View 1 (cartoon, rainbow, N blue to C red):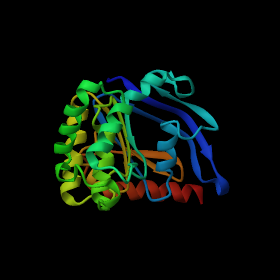
View 2: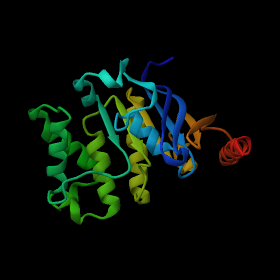
View 3: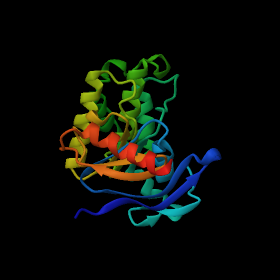
Length: 241
């Protein structure tokens, strides 16, 4: 079995009205795409933030490459690429300038920055926007820019929350190919979505989250996967009612 790069052990973080996540166990392994699916409000974004240290769990632990997230070496974060909820970019700078800054922040050596940026501009079909201010890009192209920024330094761990948001069909295909290619090269990929048909195309494993808890898993190659998903969710809702 491939080594787990990211591990959540009984992670809990609750907010008002009991929203949040409860006792979640999850791992993401080298060379796989692990999809996290659930209805809106299931707790996917909260869990992603906990896994990236943006939120602290009230109980449980998160480990990155064997290190407790609370004491993980800063250099380890250079091996992580993530995009959670909204792509971040300097609106007054062009796509290329944004990618150059991101590459430097992720520890790409100065001599290698130009090549890395050129490669990802082509990979996500952003070459025509190299000088266009990010603030003037469409939502879909800002999303492409955010994904390019998260992936250009070839991270060992990739965490993406609803990455197909605002993407046109061409962008979805580019992302799908990019993630599969990186996983096949050994990266550990965690991607959340409420689009089952999309994640099933690239996922090696699918975990179902409902009301902040893991309620089961799905076979990406299974038949009637959407029906199986709703049966899991409905069964859990009935148990909690």
